[in-house]
Length: 368
Ligand SMILES: Cc1cc2nc3c(=O)[nH]c(=O)nc-3n(C[C@H](O)[C@H](O)[C@H](O)COP(=O)(O)OP(=O)(O)OC[C@H]3O[C@@H](n4cnc5c(N)ncnc54)[C@H](O)[C@@H]3O)c2cc1C
Image 1 (cartoon, rainbow, N blue to C red):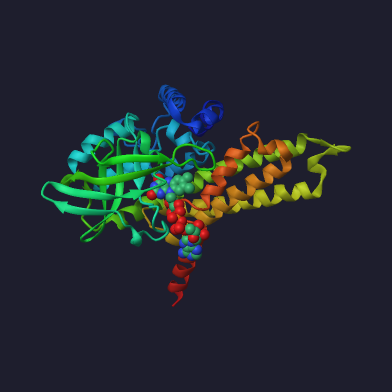
Image 2 (cartoon, rainbow, N blue to C red):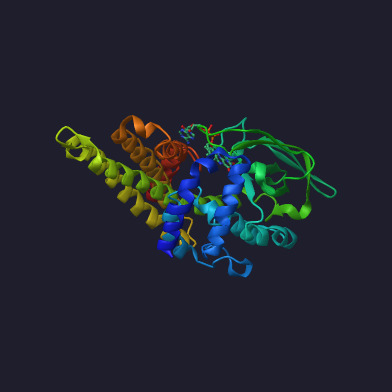
């Protein structure tokens, strides 16, 4: 299975990356044809439940594939596993009608969801400052506020919105077709499509679209983020390994003077530091993944892995660009795209500083 996933990502997904990054109708068409191919090859939705048409892999088995799948940022969407976080969240916390409406369609790839926590007016690093509010009304909730960096909002069938309600922060499943739900603008991240700012203006959300109990929004977000961060780390290591492979191939083939780049000690240093970073981040990530697969929150292990994997991707891609020279800055190589992912990795799912601070606080608290 690992060989099949790896072959699919390398031969099918990677050649389509520039079309997929550009967004729009051509990107949608390319993604749909990749999905059809993944289904035909028996590689569709591997970690999703069997009863809905997924592959039924448990987390530990799926983690063993996630690095290969994530060598392309588009791998999870093309292979149907990008909805894993939503499917698990809805299965655990949604009412029966909401589960019935969305879970099967998510696994089949007929719809996608998006997740809206971060807001323009307050620091995303501290969700207790969230301003979006939900007021209880006779037939449900009225949700009002603004969110941004809501990945995939323009194509999603629903948006899970974290909002302030009388008993604390709560999560609501908001259909994107609801009156008052609006995509305000696209926010290209270092030139790539996929991020949006959205507005919710008195959106009426049915009572049964509250996830879990009122006030449980942060706990639900925490469970989702633990798995989400672990998966991101595995994917970032896959992307770092891809940049590392490119760098080594270039170093051993590019002629310089009487030999090749790899003969130079300063080039070898780039290779050594990259290998050291990848192996260290992989060990930390596998430790976190093993605990998450057993249902542990693993805050310290995830904090270490998240910072290590994000820094590794950023550092290894930067070294690869350096070893390539000017060509590494052009779309003749995937390095500019990987550089964008590496830069964003140090901010999304919690900025480095947040994890450094929270992890150190947790280990110090264990000692007092
Ligand atoms: C590509 C991409 C996709 C994203 N997808 C989503 C999504 O789908 N849904 C969603 O809700 N959000 C999403 N985000 C938003 C992301 O989660 C936030 O950007 C992140 O949580 C940081 O919040 P912020 O941008 O408001 O930065 P802020 O919280 O304003 O932080 C700014 C800076 O302050 C510093 N800082 C923060 N905390 C600390 C601390 N404790 N100690 C010291 N310094 C600190 C850091 O340098 C940080 O970069 C995405 C972001 C990107 C780039």
